[in-house]
Image (cartoon, rainbow, N blue to C red; front, side, top):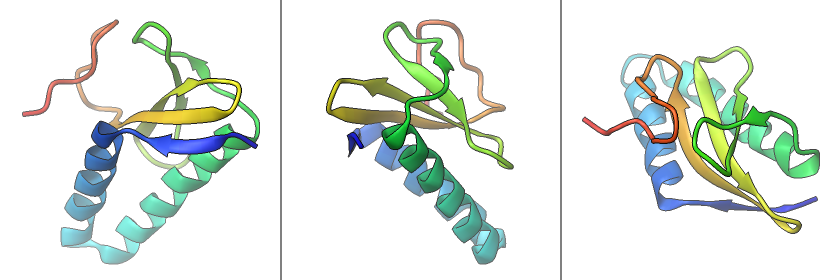
Length: 99
């Protein structure tokens, strides 16, 4: 299994999403957090997903959520680059802009 490394952007994305959801429904926030983390563990064990919109990356949707995990692979690690809500504008070869 590859080592999982979180980028600063991915950690901010994750924390922001979970805090936003928790304002209205802490239980839903916990469930979404668990699903995102499970998706990342899956990719660390067996790289799945599609080629990402940003060159050199891959993406995988998080089941039963609207989130997408963007990541990069090496032989020994998966680097989580972003955790992005699917409704965000996300043009090819760039990351969504923070508002």
